[in-house]
Image 1 (tube, helix red, strand yellow):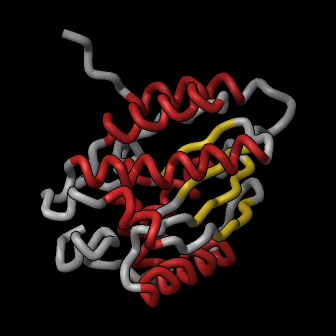
Image 2 (cartoon, rainbow, N blue to C red):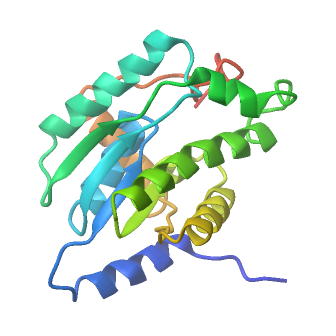
Length: 206
């Protein structure tokens, strides 16, 4: 049986290695929302120059999408960070999400529909990171206790290998990351949604 990987330790090893560089590496970070992005930005901005990419065509309804986006921008403008953090808004393309979810509408949360949604967003992040010549790409998604970190990393690594852009492994809920995100959300008065984002998860508990 393959040993369970410690993605947090793998991330720490990469950070230790880049600390010896003369230049600050550039990270393209997909973020699903400000609460999830809060701890990740606080943690990784010590080591990377980050461009946060808000691309979430799964979010429903449209007003919710823009509400979360505005909170993400507000957090970036108010949170003190060591290295620069930039912001890019992706296109709002709900039809793309509904296309990949077709036939999977009745699946429970955390199943194949969610995996396809992770891949949709991470693939776009990798495309953008590759086009802009970034050193790494990753996502904030692994901070949620309700999301499958192993699957997120599996998808990210496969996309990175396919596109030739290094994927930064993560399990941001480790080292009290999720707890810290709750503290930061309270400190900055962030809007915390009560569902993951898509119409199928609405009324859920994420």
